[in-house]
Length: 249
Image (cartoon, rainbow, N blue to C red; front, side, top):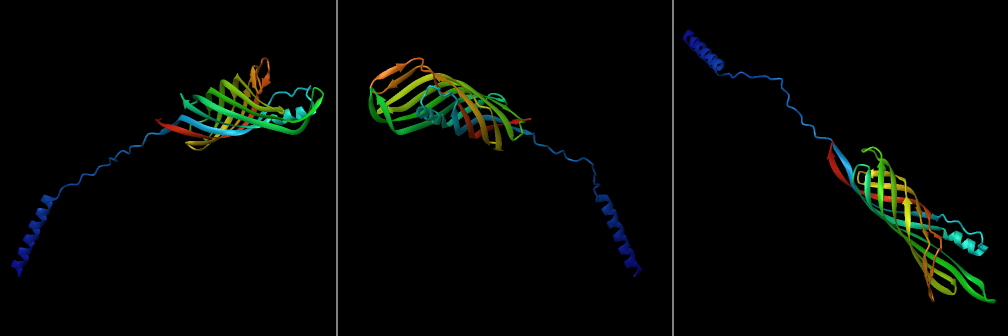
C-alpha cells in the first residue's frame, strides 16, 4: 500500500513539473486601439433651380385727364399676376450667377359701351389683355450660416422686357408690341425644409418704360414717345431645389 502511495506521489510531482515548464506567460498591455473619427462634411450649394409666382401691381400713375370709365379700366388693369423660373450656379458660398425669366399677365374688359365718333353713336367695348416677358442674367447674394435653415436672399438682374397688348377699342382689334430695357430687384427669405429643398418669399420691383410701340390693326402704326410704364411690384412665393457639393472641413 505504501508503494502505491509513493508511485502516485511521483506521478503528481512529475505532472506539476511538466505544467510549470510548458505554461506560456501572458503579456498584459494598457494600449487602447485608436478610433478613427470621420472628417466633418459641409454641404455647399452648387446649383439652384426655382419656380415662383404670385400677385403683381403695376406702379404707373393713372392720368388725371382720363374719363371715369377709362380711369377705372386702367386701375383694374394694374392688378395682375406673375410666374417665373430661374437657374443659378454658385461661384462661392454666398454668390451665384444665372438667368431668370418671368411673365406678367393682366387684363380687363368693359362691354356695352357707347362711343361718339364724328357725331355718330357707335356701340363697342374697351379691352386690354397684356403680357410682359422678362429675360435677364441675374446675380444672387445669399447670407446666413452654412449649417442654418433660414437665409436672406438678394436677387438682382438687368435685362429685356418684351411688351405685348391685345386690345380692342370700340369695334377695332389691334396688337401693340414693344421692347425695352428693364431692371429688377427681389430681396427675400428662404427656409430650407431639407438640405436640397427650400421655400422662398420675395418682394420684387421691376422697372421699365416702353417708349416705342408698334400698333397693328387695320393698319400698322409706330408710336414714338409712348411712355408706357410697365413697372410693377411683385409679391412671390417660390420653390427652390439645390444640388449640393460635399466639402471636407
